[in-house]
Length: 136
Image 1 (cartoon, rainbow, N blue to C red):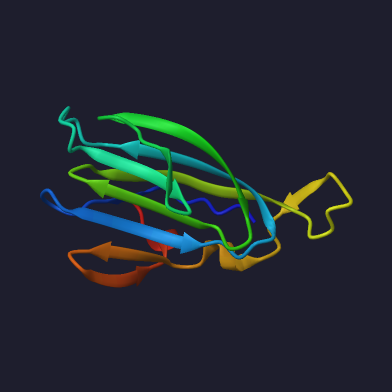
Image 2 (image 1 turned 90 degrees about the vertical axis):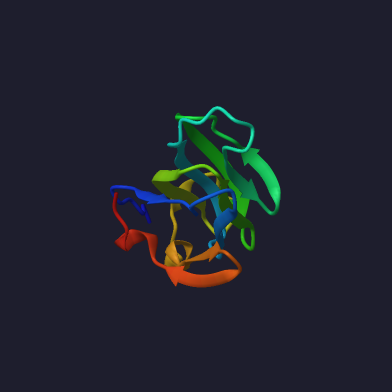
């Protein structure tokens, strides 16, 4: 499935970490993500990152937007976090491989759980928010 929305924008005010994460349940494939750090401060504490399984994949700089391709397999965890930054998530789509790995074709994700709720973390509290309902 192709999960598109206008965009999601979020931050935790001040110099504290905030994050959102999802565990992917689709069979595997490639995520396409457009992620922007919409905060113009040039300090080293202005951070927006995309991580896969705890490893940093991309870190857009101040006022920088990046298009990111992330290969994934079932069970991978994707996390987007920020510290004194401003997350703008403009695109989050997936092309998933068929469960039968003997073919080289790709199909759209058969598993709607890919678009499951992201867990939002801020100030030690967590809540769930479905990003498809968010807009900037």
